[in-house]
Image (cartoon, rainbow, N blue to C red; front, side):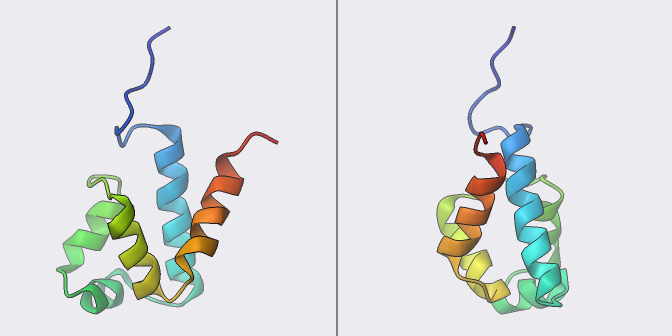
Length: 86
């Protein structure tokens, strides 16, 4: 059985991270364009992140969470809770 590569956007956990970010954005009623504007980025930045075409690092996660208007620690905990074994 082949191991998945760490850092790959193909990891199931990464899908959960992206879903967590998308859900937070939607709960705040923000469009991708609005978040991109808050980050001073092009809309395609958020679009590529949400389509898992672009991998984000921990600093980008922090900036995205803040732009969305959620506590980064709480959002990260939501992510961890979703991937942690029960």
